[in-house]
Image (cartoon, rainbow, N blue to C red; front, side, top):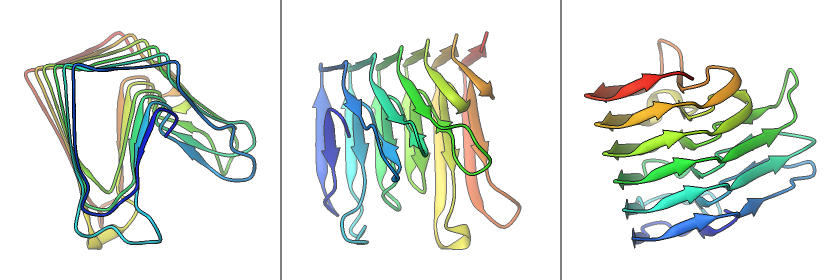
Length: 193
């Protein structure tokens, strides 16, 4: 994470009334980069007990994850810690970028928020003006561990607009029939991406 990195299993983090602005993760050379503003990850392959991250009334503005020779994930924030719980309430995610090398094997994923194998709840928030070079300007949910974990994303009373990417400008959930990937959108607006 360019601004803040949480890499301890079982971490409990509360962030309120803060601004993450102008942070940069990368450039990664030969390795991926994630979380321009903040990242939640695991250390030495250990992800249990799960971490819980509560973020409220906070702005992620103009942060960048950049990897000119490989992949980048989450311009504003990424979580790749298995089963971690990330709650965002009354947050603004704006003008963040994920700039990775677009090729058959790499890309820039999720200009705003990136959820891999975690549990995201996003409520009463605004996700706008974010950019990814390849997929999902606003955000992306992904399950890469098949049946061993479930990736959940719940978006409530939130606006996702004005984000852009080469593919899927708004929000992208990706998996296949054998993967546990759940995305729920309630009373929200997704438009103009």
